[in-house]
Image (cartoon, rainbow, N blue to C red):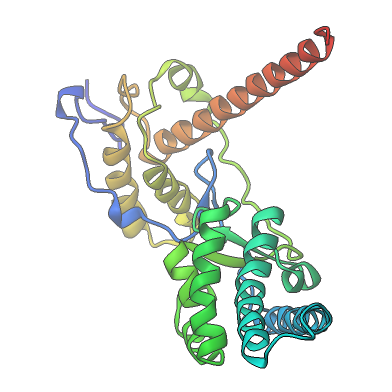
Length: 289
């Protein structure tokens, strides 16, 4: 049977092959619905203000620590007192940011004041390992180098990252800036039945994200570019979908159906997990002590 004009036919299942998806990589966090969330990156000025507040906190902590040291070891030699002060300085310079960022999952006093937070490259909260790496490298690039290395790195890198962020796989975001998500892709009615029974679990997030970006930008493209990109993406996506869609449908219709049903399944999964957590909590509360 000849396909309708403008229609697209998916490749046969035996033509499936692994594809390189590095071209679809992204710097933003990607949700389960293949929505790229461009987290609001902290500006250079915001990071400098946050760092200045943290420096004030450190100076106050050092002043209080020196008073305590002076009272406790008033009768010891100057050499011992100086050595103890140096040890205290190192402990405070490393301990304050590492401890606060670990406890608050990415915030120091300065970040808390300015509404900033350190997150992993995937957008998740940092842990002890990332806090330690940032703290150790921060000792060199901020204090020993008088912030020259950190400032140069923030100005020259994407997402305003200092060397400690590059090594730890983190960056700093502005939590007070609103994040807007794009409108979800609607399910084409003519492919709703097929999509509900199709296997789309193998579709990579990066390829799904590229598909969503294309569908969002499609109305702004020239007809030739839109047709070429849509057909190419449809063939790539079809290699991860089984069974193939019914013949005679436009590539963009197929792509929209895959993304819409992927989002529906993720929503149902999250709902099931939420009900399970509620049941476990309720049953745990009922258990006798």
